[in-house]
Length: 246
Image (cartoon, rainbow, N blue to C red; front, side, top):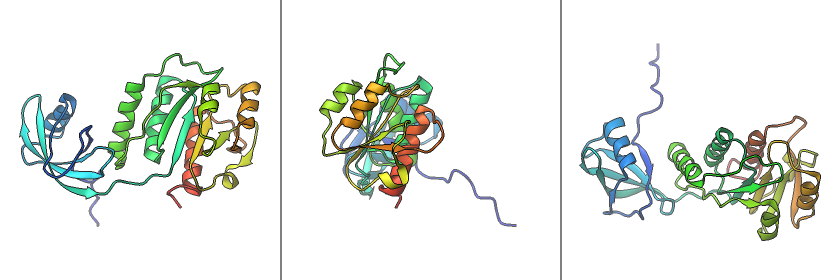
């Protein structure tokens, strides 16, 4: 009888650090990261850690010094070059906190390059805690082996979003009233996917989006999807048809 494989496979922990990495660089970890490596992962002096800074790929580092509330790492060598992700942005209307957290986590795992919260007439969330969402994106990038963390923009109203966007970047509008089937709509090139809130866009908003230059209305099928499901369904379809799943 074959042995049952261990899961997850044993590997060095991965951490994002806001320090420019290179061979020989010393990295002093934040207290939370030091606690995670020392007390949760039981890593001591000489232990291996994989680091990424979002700009220069992935690096192997070793624990050089460790204490109760601090840890220093010494960077040795690059293990992977910086990844190239599809130039896909996701503009989404924030929903309830748990659902928005999930959306940001999964969009990061799927390879979205940038996240843009957009406030619509039916958006029920009054505040978007960017620091919380950034932490979620970092943790997702650490887990899924990305070497980049998608930046999350300050929330803007729909009108401001439409006025300020680069019209050269195609806008795929996930329109619950119908549009080009996703299997035919997505094409190679810089793109934004725009998805709506719980309750959808108003007729006025839908007309304004459809009238915007270089916009393609996209249908995500015959069923009514939750807002966060629609966002991830659209990103998944794009990655399969025009992204890095091809």
